[in-house]
Image 1 (tube, rainbow, N blue to C red):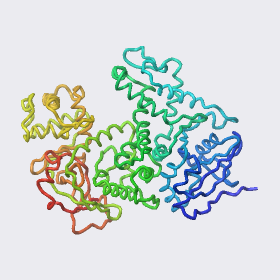
Image 2: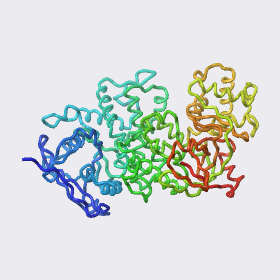
Image 3: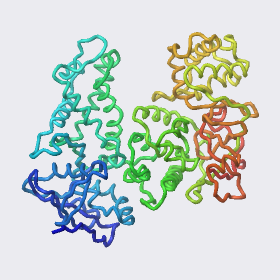
Image 4: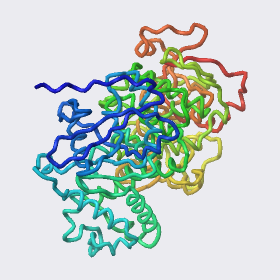
Length: 618
């Protein structure tokens, strides 16, 4: 006899009801059976004492069958494995699981339920974070103890102990140059490596799912670990790295699995724990900061790069709507954030050639040019530090001197906003990678007649001179790789002058100049940039694709100036079928930059509010 497939009954009120799954008791080989019931969702929902499951759906083509209200229901294998481990032998478990609790085929219900997810996780008693299962346990005839889970979680508990690094039994510090895995702990680090490689850590939805519940527990196979253990590890490492064990961390090299573990704890897991700590304190995040913290978390549906964070943002007027295109979702979210914070922060970010060649960049080409790709994109975790440094760098600047004028979104694409046109770009030279940086810098030194070593004496050049503008432009007039105010010093000039003299002499090559400041310039300030000179002689740095004829603008509400292109030939490429506002000038966004002499609001003070004009950027 054919068993009937489960069919949802519509929720009477999708904004104030939700479904909870009762996982019925059973043994390892028993069919997974559940019941699904509708509950009122309000401030008293926490009284239901329900758990939530945070997991990765997995391959949608690899499915297993369970029974819901005695009817067939298909779930992905990863969810099936999680339910099998979570099921009790003799008692029921009340739990919320998105793939079952939400009718995924009903777009209206899905949109309204996704808007509630932050509160659903906030009001549960505990979230179980399912990291995966041992391969051998998938088809095992009986429940196996997870070897991976046991070893990995044991290693994490060892790291959480308040001990000196050289006293931790899992490390061998007998070498004078590097730390090694202690004998007998190789399998522990291999197991932890599998945990770190779980796709769960890189999923965007897990950010709020981990941050909001009162209690969070990691689960791999048969094993559980309170997430507070990871918090203890961060506190212990911070205390020892900056104090008693500082010499170990500075003198020793960390390689292989040890380096992988350290990177995981200091970057990926650290960001998630920081968000959880502040979210539990009731704080919300500005969207740019949140995106910079979770840039390594991806989504199958790009719209979820915004929707997946709604529970952590200040109360939003925008509810999930899966009938909108990803670019419309990003544009609406960005405009709401900018008008709420009164800062054009969502327009500032990397616009690199390499990014637009990547799969992620190809997927975001439909976005309006005014929206920085880094506002809604996936980045490898290794680049997270660069993005954080970039954000810190930009936050120190104040080109529009705190002024703001609300922006208006037109047809989910273009932006109407206020601007001051500063100048038009006359000369451009794109900085190339590697030793090409030295060649570019040398060409500019020649063009500006600063190509003699005598132009770069030990003492700083006169304030306002061309040499003063040049070396400060290369540094964006500040160094923001620390928590200080970033102001340049005489010592910074001495280091830069030394590097510039090397560039002029042509010896040694840039790669062999062990000058921290020159490396900072190359990797942070000049990466994917162009040097330019305006018609009135202003020196600046723009995006890699800046061209003569592009204009420099201060957009009201932005802390940095922007390069805009007024040419219709570029405009038609991005908006071929659009209707333009006839009363305002039209532009495409090339990107943010640095222009010496206007980074601290000088243009705002000199020209005044009467010089503001409305422009339209596509």
